[in-house]
Amino acid sequence: MKNINKKDYEKYVNKKIPKPKIIKNCMWAFVVGGLISTFGQLITNFVIDNGLDEKEAAIATPVILIFLGALFTGLGIYDKLGKKAGAGSIVPITGFANSIVSPAMEFKREGFVLGVAAKMFTVAGPVLVYGFGSSVIVGIIYLLLKR
Image (cartoon, rainbow, N blue to C red; front, side, top):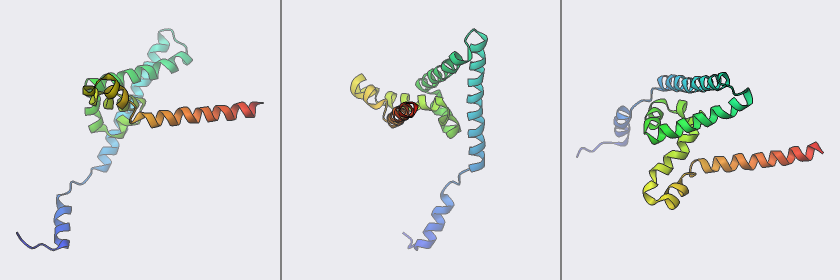
């Protein structure tokens, strides 16, 4: 082997490392996130047009988006989208559904209790605990200040 000094080796490695396409990735994430949000608005409009009021539509829309995110994760479609879109697919509520379903699917071979149930909340668990915990604290503060 050739005796290469550290500086030459670093130059060689830097030439071989792929350069990220930051602008392209940001634009693609923006477009995909916007399309998911637009689809959510279409769902809201659809359920309002079919008899739900605005409060009910505000509940139905995320439920439908979470269901679709989980379904598309199960079918392997959402992971392909996530590789291409990055944060554009992770930030909307559908990304949350993906973060719960993906670990569950990965560990389904270990059984329903020790695999699916135990691993389902590995990513989303801390988010849920923080959300529930902070809402309880805010609720207690609100209750105390209301008196």
